[in-house]
Length: 366
Image 1 (cartoon, rainbow, N blue to C red):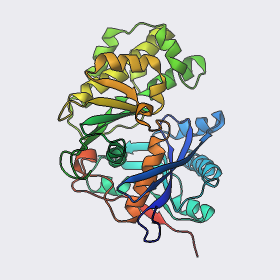
Image 2 (cartoon, helix red, strand yellow):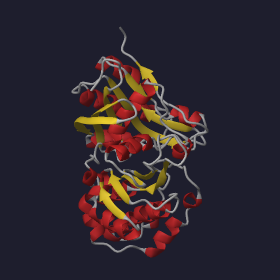
Image 3 (cartoon, rainbow, N blue to C red):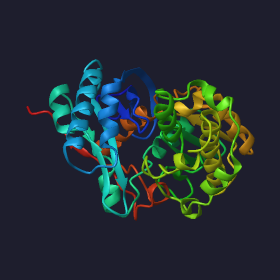
Image 4 (cartoon, rainbow, N blue to C red):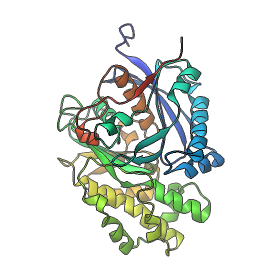
């Protein structure tokens, strides 16, 4: 690994997703184009009290709820990231609100303060420049997915499916030379994923999530509710397109009269159905779908996806990748790209008017 000329850097990325479970951190070695290796990883869970503060701030753009959430996010990241050694840090922060066509996008977390605390450069606020140039500001992992496809030696189109609070799909054609070239990528949010089920079991049973899909396994899908869900205007929009965590919050009202198990099964089926609808936008049928994010641990959801899609549906671990850390690794990768003035999104990933490298670089004083 040649660090003498700055070609390859050891980058640390951090991600706190819309599922509100905690902060992931991961190190990779990269020059901003290729992946040269994966380093250590870590996780810092949010306490239930911290989750309550974050939940209370969702959908807010300012005010005391947002300030309280920012304190939680900053503290959690300092706790975790201070245990790592790296040349640069990619800090995503916590998304509280996302309405790119209206008010913009809001990720709380102070990257400048984090740079001072860690004593190293921090790249943050990755989404704002993309939104300013007409993009959705999301998803941002696709350029890293392209690098991952090259790293695993893929030679045919494939898709990465991230099942976090929201589901997002990245179609990758590794035969094309670079990620920003036309046809290399198509990315968009397919619909809700874990967030509605998490909210349901939290409200009804006091649980953070439906572990192993046990509640959904006992239920029956309500077809009428599923049809109403698929009638939402979002599914007729052409990609790229993105969602806020709460854009489909009224899904829970569609299952309000159902027993717990039937409600969980129906919400889980909605996620799979949204993905199946989204797959129709792929320029060419992908050879396989590699699934990342917490949803891949739900066997009921994975079975529903396998039935709904006309290709292999597998957790990314079968390809030698870490599905719990892929997003954190993505922001490590993007941090190096920002530092080197390389694009982090393009028209086919966020709908931005031209390829753009978003992100603010904060360096520690001295």
